[in-house]
Image 1 (cartoon, rainbow, N blue to C red):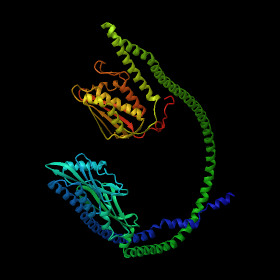
Image 2 (image 1 turned 120 degrees about the vertical axis):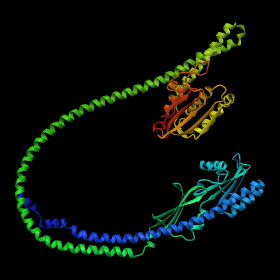
Image 3 (image 1 turned 180 degrees about the vertical axis):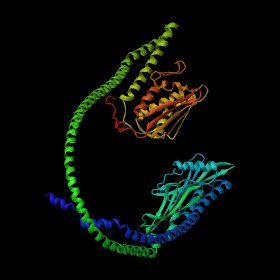
Image 4 (image 1 turned 45 degrees about the horizontal axis):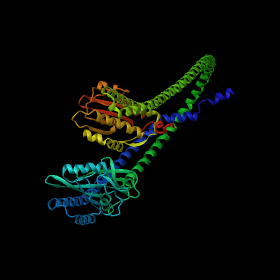
Length: 607
């Protein structure tokens, strides 16, 4: 059997021959590759010329489309501007005459969707649509943020302004033109016109169109219009051309796919490529055959020498193999002992880790029970204190009814007792609110902070009137959270700003939103109150902590502690920046995507 294996390992003459042939195969391959490369250079030159021709055709077509598009776009805007200029000199016409003129305008310009007169109070007393049954929102002339900015820009510049592209109808984009009516340097109103892009482009593109072309209109990086042939595929050529129209950053991109390129190409470059490739393969085959003839004789002689060498090496290999097997058995025995030791050590570590995990689980359960007992203790204690406190207040009120029978000293004691009872009632109420942040929690849901602040402002209407205060909002987001607790949070911060305002200075409170760059919502509550030194920035969030005496400012010192607990429950942070006599800014950071566990929180069954 060993003899048979030995002869199987002898070099195969055919195999050795192929190996030698492979080592010198670079010569015919080089000849073939050289000819093919030269052919590719010629073919590439032809292809580049035809691609340049296609690019030139796209450029000419783009310039033609641009010229005709601007020619269709300028008349309606100029007509809109002339209409306003007539009103500046002759006055605003009656509504019936204006509506007749507006309908004539919309009939004359098919791209127009509607006209509206926006007075100085942003109302829409007059408006006309090309389709009276259109489902368009009557206020969408300035509802979107971009339209609001364009409207304000027209008021500021006192000149015609074109809005960014917006969705006028479902699936159809357009723009709004704002033409202000200026008299004696003052804007008395704005004439707004809505226009669709499709009626402006369609007459241009339907006359000379190919299935392999596509025209796109971009505003910055945003695509606002696209028209392609019915069988348009991936673009292989593109030309970009800016459209200058009232400072709008519009850019037209005309593209061609492979079908247009195939139509442009002639068959000359393909014929050159095929002929060159065939010639290279033919020469490579001739060189290859000549090599085979020469290498066959050399290979037979080399196989004989290799056979003798193989026999001697086989004997040496058998001797070395016996030595290797002995050494391998020794290594296996050593490795087996190491593995048994490591396995025993691993079992001890696993047992120790399981004991630690059990201890950690018991500690966590004990901590949860302790926190639950602490919250229940605070709630029960507050409820138990309510009853005797009510009796003190009730008996104090009864004594107050017969205060005329008491001397001045007794009435003073009675008044101090009632004040102490009221302060105790406030302490208990704040303690209950503080404990219910966790025990009476509601599930998280999307909460719009804008109406929440408006509701709080309505509740504080009397106090705002007394202090001549104002509450302003800006860019407040919709966050995931407990709407009741979020209202309590903003209410406490706004009331704090009203409480600690400077004498004779009406409080100005600003509640604004944004992001902090770390994936969190940022809500800022700013005021122009008395402020404080920032060295107390952490102390004021501690329960029952006050920086001023009760005679100077009312309160229990629990408001900001409740705010901090609410923010922590929502997975966020709260901080403050302040300077004496310059006001304070409370900064709240809430995660844009709260943990799934918070989202599924259920109300406490005892609530």
